[in-house]
Image (tube, rainbow, N blue to C red):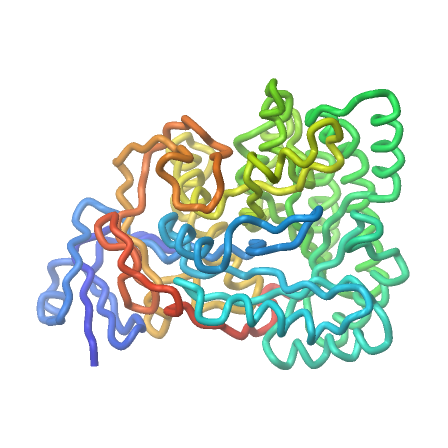
Length: 466
C-alpha cells in the first residue's frame, strides 16, 4: 500500500474551501482533515507534499480535445502522448477526446481506431466521445451498445457539409435514440449549408484573408443552428449539449431554453473568453493562427459569455484543443481562408486562463473548479471518480501556486505546435505539482510522468438530466 499526504494547502472544490491535509492510499483519496488537527498530524506516509501557501485543487477535466484529428488534408499536431503531457503541465488530469466515425464505416471501427491511437500513449487518464458522421439503422443500434460500454455521448455537426455534416432528419433520429438509451447529443451548431454559400461568395469577391473566416461564419448562423438543435432535441425528448458557444445570440438561445426547463447545456472555450476578431485580423497571415470554428467573435460578445458562466447558462469551459502548426499546416490556406485547418492549441492553458479570470473578478475560485473540473466530470459521467477531492475519488490533484506569475509563450509551452494563441500574455497562477491517481506526473515543475500511465476510463451517463 502506497500512501501520500498533502499538507497545509487550501483545498478548493466546487462546493468548499478549507485548509486541510489530504491522505491518499493506492491512488485514491481516503480522508481529509483540517490542517494541524490531531487526526491530520497522526497520518504517516512514504511521500509528503508540502502545499503551504498553495491551492490544492482537483485535476482539470477537459471534455473537448482532438488529438491526432484528421482535418483539411492534415492532422492535428499533438499526438495522444504529446497532448496529454501538455495537459498535465497545465493541471488537467483527464481528457475526453473524440473518436470519429467515417462515412460508410461503423461507430465501432472509429472507436477501435482511436483506442489504438491512445493505448499506451497517454500520460493522464482519458475517455472518448463518438462523432457520428453517418446516421443509419446500424449506427443507431450501435449507439445503444456504446452507451452500455461507457461511451455515453455522441457529437453531431450542423457544419462541414461533405465531411461531418448531418441533416435535420439524421440529427432527429440520433436524438430520438439518445432519448431512449441515456446518451447525450453534443452539437456543433452552425448552419453549414448557409456558411458554404457565404464562403463561395466571399472568395469570388477576392476576400481571401483569415479575417473573412470569421465574417462568413456569422453569429446569426450560430444562433439559428443553436435554436434549431434545441427544437429538434425538444421534439425528440432528448438532452442537448452545445459545444464551443461563441456568440451572445447563441447564449441567449440556450438561456431561453433553460428558463423553459429543458435539458440544454452549453460549453464555451478560453479562446472565446480571451481572444477576438482582432486576432483574426492580424497582418501577414498571422490571423490564420486563430482560425477555429465556431470562429472568434468581436470583443463585445465576451461579456455575454462571462455572464453565462456566472448565471450557469453556460456550465463548462473546455478547450476544443485541435492544434495545427503555422508553418506547413495553417499555411495551407494562404490565398484561400477556407483551406486553413480549423483549430487552436489550448489544452495546457485552460486552468491558468480561468485562474486569471478569478484574479480579474469574472468568477469565484469555486466556480473556477466547478466549470473546469466538477461540472465536466458530472456532465460526462466521470464524477465523483474525477472532478473533486473527496474520499473515494481518484487522487487526481494539482498543487497550484496562486501567486506565481508566468508569461505564456510557444517558447515555454509543451504542446506540439509552433505558436501560442496567447503569446506574451502575462497571467498570475501556475501549476507546481500534479498527481494522477496518486502518481506524480509533474513534480515541482518537472515532468515525472510517463506515456502509458494514463488509462482508458469508461463513463456513466450525464448526471444532470431531469
